[in-house]
Length: 286
Image (cartoon, rainbow, N blue to C red; front, side, top):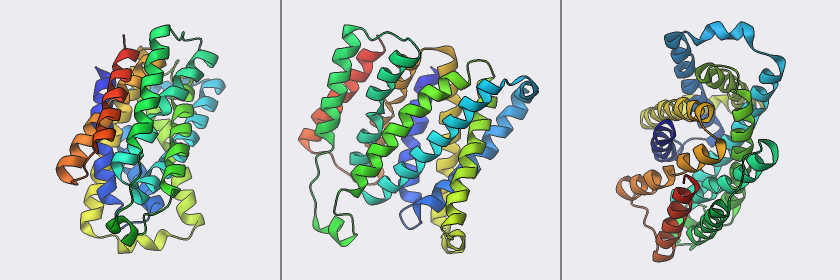
């Protein structure tokens, strides 16, 4: 149930963030969203009383939380840059394909088995992803400067870092409250995101963000916070090789919302690709 909650809020996050970064630098938007997530996460720590566990955190746990936070920050920066450059229905499938690498890493480092059924599921997910990333340029995209494959590179990097996030996060929260682990990881992402903004000298862009973009950036931050709280609680309760596939069902939510609110349509090929991705994801949970 926590994994399903994570999937729903992650799907909503992608659409809200896409709207929020349309006229805003993606790194600035990432830093602002992370600020919202950080506040939300620490409020949850105070509500649940998880802060008492700070004193008992071991060095090993702290290191893995730090590494997980850095991987998350890198994934976010790549993901939202990809969203800014490409269609949401093309970017999200690439990002969600991180499930394949996550399962392999869980097998190598966590000893989670890969059954024949999981093997078939991974093939379906990989094939479905390839079908969904079909790229057809149109006049509108070229006019907006979206031509090229830069979005694909950023989306692929996002998937790699997302996989590392899941494995490192699984190890990092194994001995502490998931809410506290989420809050600590968020602080790492926050420092990384604002460090990049300040390093690029883009803090002046804050004054140029309009009210509409502010609203959607803040809402996407709240959605992300809810998704993270559910996700890391699910990771704490269940195996990463099962939790991650359920979380990746957020692609269905994203595609549905993108179709309704942003009028992004799937081709027949992409629609069949989505069917394969969902089928493979569901098989992973058996």
